[in-house]
Image (cartoon, rainbow, N blue to C red; front, side):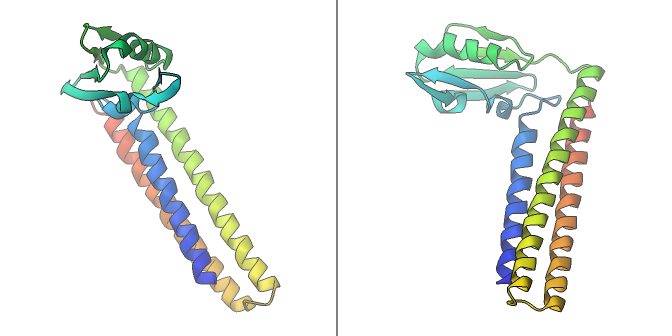
Length: 185
């Protein structure tokens, strides 16, 4: 039973790291990345759909993204959705697709992006600590119900802390990697 608690905590922490990678993919660095459009949704016949489901997204150049919808009637809707998403880019409709040219990031923009990714990292650390708190409370409940000895409970709580420390360290590594990517010209 306590091993299950450890495994569940570790799995939840792993999901937190995966979510952080996905969040970081939406943050703009020096190169064009189609993932920055992941959060943009378009009204497609009454249903909000991500752009990736209604169009092909390509990166023809390092500073350009090209979106070609499967249904040409969606061009203006996609263009409006990109404007509404406030990504700091201006889409250009060429009648067949939408071209997004990414201007080079200024030093100020880079510093602002680093603040955003730092905030995301801190939020994920809080999530990891919440998972740790839940696991420890489950272990204490087992101890209280006499399903676990006090020594075993202490041992498993220490293991939960070791797992937590490992994942906090991973978050720091992911943050430093993304910070380096954003700050490089």
